[in-house]
Length: 243
Ligand code: SAH
Image (cartoon, rainbow, N blue to C red; front, side, top):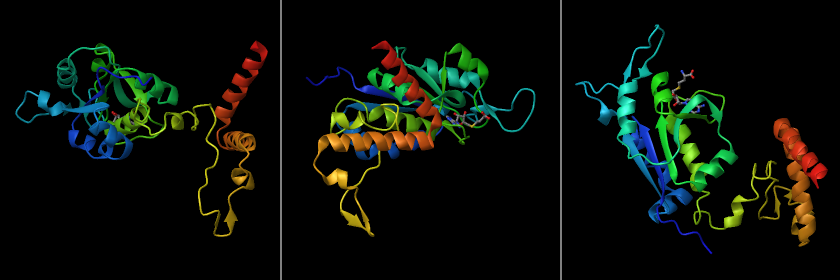
């Protein structure tokens, strides 16, 4: 039986560039799901919560130094204006815990997210503390703002919502889901620029296909991601000693 949601999965995004959220999530899987009401996105313009004539959202850093810092009072007003609910409140931040498929799975199973996008040098520490924002990073590099990070996070969540992906199964076998990178994929033409698709994949032998994919996934993970490979071996070792 398909899970029917009483309420669509809801993403509230606090940003000074609300227009950035219309385009990218309006196409393909996420866009179709948006149209059919499986989820909804509510960009909130932080600037609407300013009180001064210049509508300032930032000010100079205490202690000096370059750049500007997002003001805690304005951001807190924007957050406090959202009806309280049990959705996690995230702050996109290069200092945050890294985004992983496990965390995405958990959030996709919930009711949605409230996401704050930083700009400038970041946000005043006090608003992170008082509003209990959970910092999330999409990688060890610095973007100019949290919007593109939030888009990446939302894309990863939305494709997992029930009814979004064509085949429910297509999420299950992908990179990271089993702790391994995905095996190489091929499609027609069977021979392209002199290179043939591996014979086993056109043999029709499902067991052999599965074994080939498994060993290729293991090889790629070993070669490219020693960190994931070590964690995988550890899980295999534990499951063997347990059972
Ligand atoms: N001065 C900060 C960087 C600020 S970048 C520092 O050195 O840590 C401006 C904003 O972009 C941040 O507030 C954050 O919201 C966003 N951002 C930048 N890099 C990011 C990353 N890797 N993951 C998530 N958000 C990021």
